[in-house]
Length: 415
Ligand code: BGC
Image (cartoon, rainbow, N blue to C red; front, side):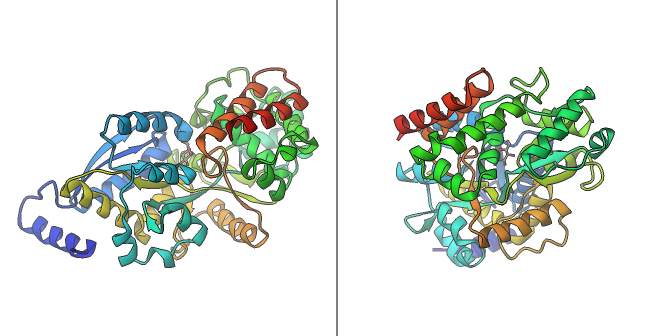
């Protein structure tokens, strides 16, 4: 079989001599949910690089932060027997689709380029099915971040909080001054994003017991009741228009000084950067209270397509995604850090450096945990139960004790 490099070299020669035929770098239809300003800019770098290799990119964006709408569209496409060639997919979802026989592997590319030697083993294992790569990671996003408008904080003479008690005190001050403390979009995945950062503040062991091991005592116990108490507090800090708001519009509220904080993964930084804002000056990033790191790695999985042109497209895309140049360019726009461990962070900003530093420390301290809300930790069915209970709680006056019990019961039913 021809290696990818020789295919690409052949394609380059052909491209030089003739008007580029559309199969020079293959064709890929790419299904993703990167439609906000920062996201579109980031995925644009992938499209551009792929087209530079002579490939034909068919864009299939499905709007909807967190990817729930994209996953529904994906199911419909697979059921219809017409899957897209590359799909933004992650965590256990990759294994689920592979188990159903829906994925092509790109093991020949991965072997030739020695992916095993440049990816953290925990991430590599998520990308593999039966020891073969069926997906390629583009980044590592950190979920447990607060995005802060320093000018708004200064209005009430407050510092960036480091505990929930401090956060509540600052938020009370802001509220008293007529300022919305927390920009939030009331959508289940955003509610769950905030929820899991509070779970992490109770320690990585508790996070693992509750959100990964699905331990009934952790889900229904006192600590979980405390978590819901803090979530109830946060509910009191959002503005009346929060319901259904897209996450990037909540980011814009912090950017424009309409709110002081947003709790969101570092794709929010992509929004600030796309708007020309400077970290440390126009906005601040600070981890949510606690010691740990919730990770969320985006990746593309390769679905079973046929035909030389499309299979070639998958291989060229896989190789491109894992190239150090692309990992740098893409992540500078996306707000995340490279998935490859050997990419220099020289061009990255202080938030990315902090992410990397805390990642390294959390791995050492055993406090590096996968995101439940962003589909890195548990199957979709179980995640769905978490989202339902957390959202019901956020939008009702359910007590924390009832919420913890409802969570334990729902998770038990889903298993
Ligand atoms: C994805 C990010 C994306 C965010 C908002 C997350 O689940 O991992 O890449 O920017 O959702 O759409």
